[in-house]
Image 1 (cartoon, rainbow, N blue to C red):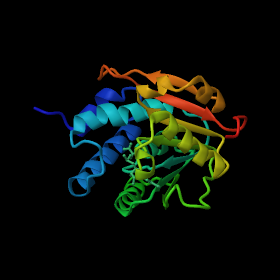
Image 2: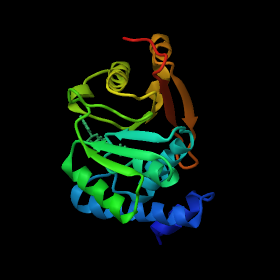
Image 3: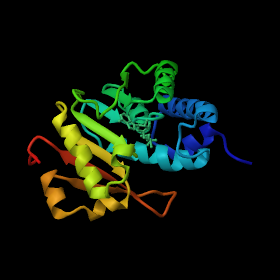
Length: 219
Ligand SMILES: C[S@@+](CC[C@H](N)C(=O)[O-])C[C@H]1O[C@@H](n2cnc3c(N)ncnc32)[C@H](O)[C@@H]1O
């Protein structure tokens, strides 16, 4: 017999308080309810999404410092909503350009009573956009404009967009192993550091990349 969302969440996030666990479960239920008609998560397998997407985002959040975040290309709120749930004193702005995602994020904000969340419908490539937060976060950002680029080109393009449009001092990206192959030039240009998130559920790890902008070299 398959386990309920609450049971999976309780078995995974063993160090969290009951209140946080019930909010994480409520968020996942909302996500999959909306997913049935709007396709907003990467997979329809609830167990997989909890153990891969939500758990990795939880580990990601534990590595973040700062009090204001922007999740760009937030989609269904991964990782932004997890950050907002675990860091109630931080402000989290969730940006997406698509109305389907924005409607879901507004619903999740209301249902989960997330006073620290702002939902923003915008195009991050729009001329004149500003990112007013200390820290940008992102996971699986995808867009036609960058889809044909090689990993390093895509990475540099995104970091230059973030750097040139606001007051952001750091960016964190939850990503896969290609980040380990970035050139030395790219690593030093963006003052980049990488840490591994090992998973108790999967053989492949994900990585958290931290980029510091305040002293990084202009392109
Ligand atoms: C693959 S989804 C990732 C969603 C979420 N971060 C996750 O990991 O589940 C990429 C998201 O980026 C958004 N996106 C693509 N281009 C964008 C743009 N130019 N401005 C804002 N959002 C954009 C899409 O609408 C989509 O929600």
